[in-house]
Length: 170
Length: 271
Image (cartoon, rainbow over all chains, first blue to last red; front, side, top):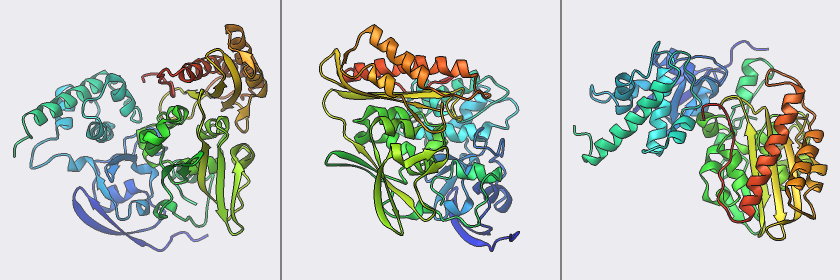
């Protein structure tokens, strides 16, 4: 059995920037992000497709980056927690989590932020059930979730508010 | 063969699967589609659960939406595919019981050409299908249910990302509001393959649907279940769960056959 496979080239756009990485085909997207691109905001929690700490967006849809091979993302667009902040301004989802104390230790937070971002992009005004279902693939062992739900509601209100004002301004 | 990878990659991490090479099917053109076609709804093997969840064509067969909308969590539904689920034949998988209740067929392709097999014959044992080593699932064909036909699928799980503890798919064909012409009851997670509960369906077929008939159906489903005790529950617990899920799935299917809008799917704490 060969210990190391030949590297293959993976071209992906990460947070708007085209990147090209030579990587062993066995390696995971989360490893590419953290180890090759030094984007350590995406966390590895359980490494078993359970906890959602590694959630990123691939072509606009949330996925668990510990359960996607880096080569599967070839040609795709990836958004990570590092890309949420724009021009020194936090994303409304980040603001809402900070404001509502939607985190304690913070380990799971990047995954929750990305799942919330994905939920609100598709469902800008989610019902309580849609919120709970939308982030059910993310596990938090500190908060008991109540402040996370509050944060998602607040983020949805904030986003709606911004839209009503005709954009967030520059 | 790597489809969505949501089962295969975790299995590889545990070294339960050690393939020397993987072929990524994600770039195969025309492999993800949901198309009504004559008497069938055709679903391409690489169609993601999320695409079925969002599909207006699939929503016309509500039992498909019940299943697609509740598999694991949003992230897994965005990657996982119906073809991968069927080909893996995990006894805890969601699609097989639903597709069996609907009488769906699986079209595969391989060196010997294409062949189409009813899904009840396609899955032969736990994690085992009729596919040869060089065969692929190409398409799932779901017969379009006729008038007064309706189904429902309810799975119970402890939380979103895990496999269900038990699940029940019910499909009925009614003559009128009260009289059932044909029925199918399939149980998930309580056998090496989905359990086609023939006696449970027999308690409905050709019968007036009374509370007594519903109770006989649930009891027959409980008797047909062959669960294993594990961390998700004891044998007795899982059997009770099958009874409860059968009643609820049947009531939802009957309401839908009357034209009512009923939403059911996977149930779990915190939903």
